[in-house]
Every structure is written in C-alpha cells, then in structure tokens.
Length: 360
Image (cartoon, rainbow, N blue to C red; front, side):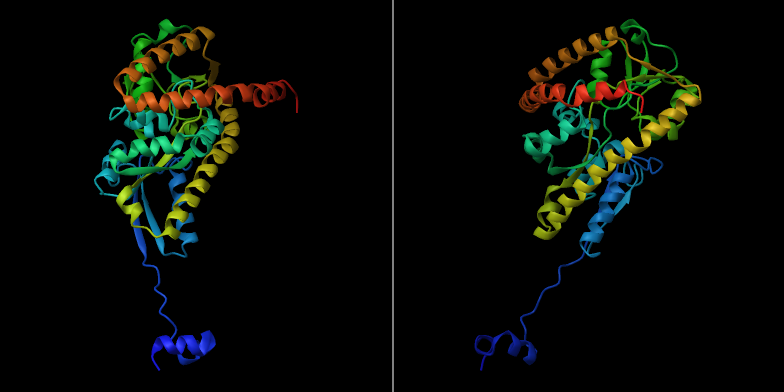
C-alpha cells in the first residue's frame, strides 16, 4: 500500500501509529538588525526599539530575533534610512522628519508645526488614510513604516536667555529636530542647527548654540539641559504629537512568513503604546524636579505663537508647490485634523481645561 492510500484508509491515528505522518516544516529562524537614531542613555525613546525587539522574540518563541543598535553603532543617527534602503540593516527606529531633506513629505509621517496631537495622529494613521498614504510614499525608498512610539506634545525647548517676542529669535542659533521646523524658524529669523540628541548638551554648554529642543522633562533632565540653559518654554508647537517609526526594508519584510508579519504589526503597536504611556508617567515628576532646581518654565507668548503659525503656513504653501507627495498627504492630514479639532473641543479640551483649574 502506498503512502497516500495508507493515509486515506488508516485515518490519522493509524498514520501516527505507523510513524509516517506528513512532515511539518519548522519555520526557519530569522535574525535582523535594527539601527536606532537614538542614544542608549534615553531609555524612553531608544527603549521603544528594545520593547519591540523583546516582543518579537517572545511572540515568535525565540525564532525571530532583532538586535538593537544605538545611534552611531552601525551608522550615523541620520543615516539610518539610507541603511534600510540599501539593505545594510533590515529596519530602523527613527523619527521620519529627520529626513525632510530627502522630500518634505517625510515630516508628515511624524509631526508638522501645529499638526495632530498624539491621539489624533494614531487615529489618522490607523483609521484615516495616514499609514496608507505614508507607505505609498515610502515605497519609493524600498521600505514601509510601522508605528514605533509617540512622545505626546513636546516642550518648546531650552534657551540661554528669555524670549519675550518674535524679534528675540533673530540671529539665534537653535538646535531643532527636523528640516521643516528649521525652515519655519528661519522665517522667524533664527539659525537652525541639526545636532543628534547625544551632542546637544556640549553644544549648549560651549555656547555653540543659543537654544535647543529635544522632547520633554524626563529626557531633557537626563540630558542635563537645565544646567546650561535656565529658560524652559512651552508648548512645542512644532511637535503636537510626533510619531516615532520603524522603517522596514520592503524586500526583507516580503520574505517573512505571514506569522512573522503579524508579529511585527503586534509588536510595533505594543512599543508605540508603551512609549507614550511611559512619557506620560515620567514627565510630571521630572518637571517638578526641574522647577525645584530653579528652572524657569515659561509659556511662549501669544505673539510668538501667532507669528509661528503664520510662518508655518507660508512654508506649507511652498511645500505644496515643490512636492506633489507633500501636497497630497498634507491635504488629507489637514482635512482629518479639522474634524479632530472640532471633536476635541467638545470633549477633551473642555474636560482638561476644567480639571486643570481644580485642586485634587
């Protein structure tokens, strides 16, 4: 009796007893490398990649492992997109707006001045057109994106002198996170500087720059900015809800099994949620400690916000004219935001405003 006849006539029990069950092919082990744009000292934003990698390993039973490498280990912090594109690494953990110089549309995958807050960004990405449009754009670079975290609305940065009006920005050398805000601040009269997170303190200390923004109280305190710049402004109107992303090499992703693709998606969702929750949990204590250490925490004036908004809109119009990818994605994002602002006005904003006035 041949193998096929035996299976048909003996049934599964007989097949197992005969020791001739169809072979089950174990899924081959997968080993990837992740290049981060962040230093290990920042356990929140760098740590998001570790949360992701640990989840991938656990969900795959150890068959899918990703080694995480800090910014500068395998390649420069701002060279990671090139690394993913050319296949030097399978993926990166970074902020899309760092690569604004390649195409303005990169910034829309993370944050633009006066853009979406963290919850709105997640809604646009998952239930609006955000992820679809961004991945259509990233396809031109041989990669696709997954959410890798969010910091929530950031602080407006550290300044060596008090800022009272838009005129105070003229001639100011300021470290900024991306080329888009750099173009806006140039219109305000500032001189933007692109410096990785691990080098900001020394630049402030030496007076190479006059001001710098990073994220918020927890990270900023760890980096020691309060020791070299006494004025801490808010809000970071250029980063209302900046998404951190995993960029994955398309060919490497396509070679994964359906199971491992599902694991990537689930692990990224976990890492993204965890990062925002961690920042929200840690920032209040850090802010109180900074105030206790004599940091002067001040709001940007209405005049500064108005001038910043005007300058931002001018840059957006310029981008519409020079990048069709930007124009398409930006229009969709703003249409989504209009409804979000309306909804939040009736619920979140009023609730938060009331709670901020109460003594708990």
